[in-house]
Length: 477
Image (tube, rainbow, N blue to C red; front, side):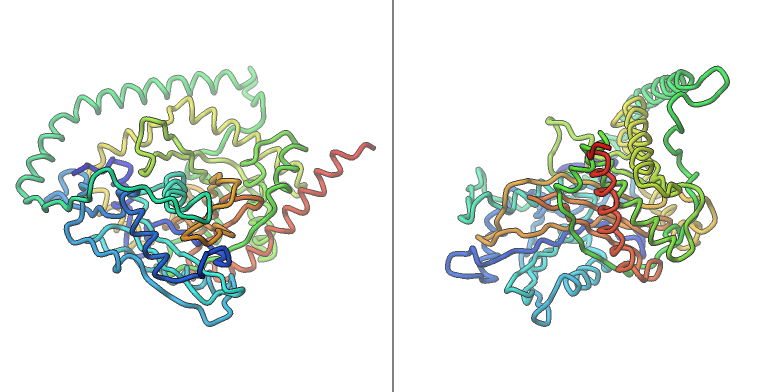
């Protein structure tokens, strides 16, 4: 058995009837590369052959009595692959719009906590004889980077599957008694005060360094030396996205050329992530302006940051986050991308000063019962409508492979990822780069953002505007 980290467990505690803390993906495949042709059974066999490479797929939760400590992972003694791997079909010929609708329906339902926390739906009936795989995995088991690692573990570099044999056969575990689980939890909690003191000391030290840095970036008259500092929590303007949510979801998929984003990056000497943020910020700006709901204050993005090191488990959570401005008050796209780059740069420096694992360290001491009750109270009482938003939108940028990948011999054409939405943050945008494209998965509360298609329509024009500005920058006067 393995104890969930505090961060892994926090994603369980944050889940409510309307807030589902799973992450999703939709992978579209071209089966014309399959020798002998596509079959669902071939897909099933491939998943079964790779289960030993993804331990989370055969592990279920064991809860601690009285919620005294974080739950445990246990090799499921009743593992049933046919519960997790399912088959579906779209009315043929199904397009990307129909696939997104199916993904929205699948992601609108929570996972069963008595089983391993994942599902995979093999979807047939897409146009051009394509097939897709829609996955749903709880955030307690993966983050964006580990989700990519799991996906690539299930995929191949060549049409011919390269399946490795497990070093040891899978051994289902015996479910321990409540008494033994409780005794282990008590023993571990007794050792925690020392770790709490160490974490508090590191946090206080980081806070002092951050305060000193803030003094150093100000002039004697109190003005900023390099523009505005990064946003702080609960100072974002209110938007239609920042309200209580329902369990229902909408999903949109779109893709943009990777080279176009790189050209903008190079023209303005910013990062790839800065351009992704600028595209998202410009699209959200255009959408809100059309609705006459654009705030005068710039929107704030919550940007997940991987804090994974080589010594950690590559298939578990190792994530922190920073807040950055989306400069949505700037009409000029060049000013917008430059301000975003400045805000993101300062946010990263602040994140380093505070310490990459400070957030994850503190989650180790969360009281499970208190955390879960607080999340349910916050969700059921509509408190998200009563205060300034923590942020306006989540924007994740996950780098993917440039070379083609295959699943059961079928070539992967596109890879869309989707994160969770929460009360007060009804919109999540995830960008996944693969080969020559950047694939965007937009997911939102169905009732809060009923016209997600309208928002998705602003991404391509926003990038075109940035690309034209980049070309003008490169063209001599």
